[in-house]
Length: 172
Image 1 (spheres, one colour):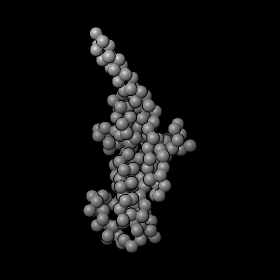
Image 2 (tube, one colour):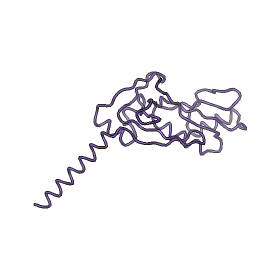
Image 3 (cartoon, rainbow, N blue to C red):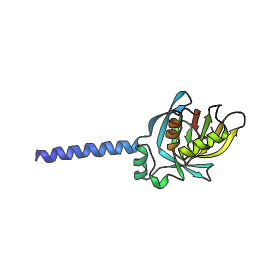
């Protein structure tokens, strides 16, 4: 009898923890903006639909399964090419998302040929050169949080001067 009461109490506690995670409004996240560390908050109550790689439509998350994925810090693979997580610079602040692509500044001593070879070895696609006087390129990526991870990873490589995701920010 006592064992059943303990199992029931533990079950209630686990359900409570699970529901608390589903109702969490945001998760703190750190990303590198050049040399600075930036704190942002992953808002598990919203996702962004990315249309044509440019237009962003914010949508409230009502599906508990989707909210559960978001509370773990990522979207399910079924949402990976058209949707992005939604972030805020301060909790409850202006929404921002990652529609895809990363801006990378290469060191000055690298020419375009070496940059293209580097991109091929990294299995990355150079989309366009952004600045003719500096080695800044736009690298093609899918929407979502992986852009933060990739930009942070690229910053550790000797060829890279700076790397940051293409952020879309809600107008104020």
